[in-house]
Length: 398
Image (cartoon, rainbow, N blue to C red):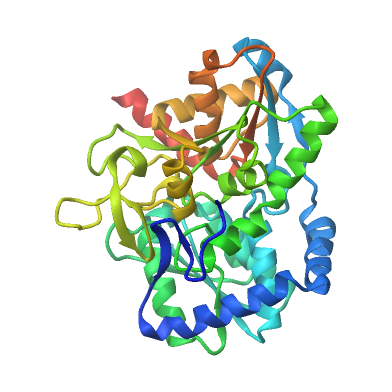
């Protein structure tokens, strides 16, 4: 059910909708990835770096105070915030940099919204001595200035993108233009389960370590599988990473949480399943926020990492199959959840992750005390404190 065909389609979603100049590097990458994942030496090398450098396995934390406050299911947090660089993004970056090394590439490019993927890309490029260029929307650079500093400190060139809305969509477009020009020397570390095949499948596979660990850990702690998995969904790599190991366990609910922003009105949110329809964007066919003429709509979220007009094609397929459900959380609810988790558990989640936390707070009554819920805490909130401070100050003035 969750394996794409040879052209990368999950049912009607996915595919390779790119210019002819990108077909060669995509086919090259597909061949190399297929060889690598069957190669025990590659898997051993990746496991080594994930363990010794990234810090895996990450902990599955019983959120005792949160559970008590909500009076609902036992809540566990999968602590991807404990990964080196502070988020799940480095799982995928480590896999892709090892692929780039196998292919003899010397230069890395990446896009980033919230900055965590850019930091992770810059980190692995530094580790392996490769040049790194990160494309980032000018708006995102301003609201994620800490991560811009981190990327530059790691030796990466951060290129501001001033086209369009100056956020993640435009950053991806610029990265793709660079790749077209420099395919022989450059590998594009795309950061989520989007884009043309093989990226949705490959990024999911590299992130699936999250779900494999969580499955082992919850069976050891509780002796049974969880009732539900909850994760935020921008492109959707942290959610797919958690979901993948549980897809065949039909009794385990899988819940993805999109950015409801300021409400489900054009230009005010990034909830693709609430306001989007089938379309093609940046290499893949999936749910896209677009107007009646097919023009991509503006998006909004307090979270830079969820502020994107399309969703990963496998998420659309899981939704069609009734295997996963998708909801959305607004800016105000997400900021309140950021504060709540800090007060209850001493953990400041990334604003992306705060959407998943907010969903569980808002819908706590859907579970009984005997149930178990795992929330993917996909990143830590250091990067967001300045933006949240400014957001709260604006709210006071309103």
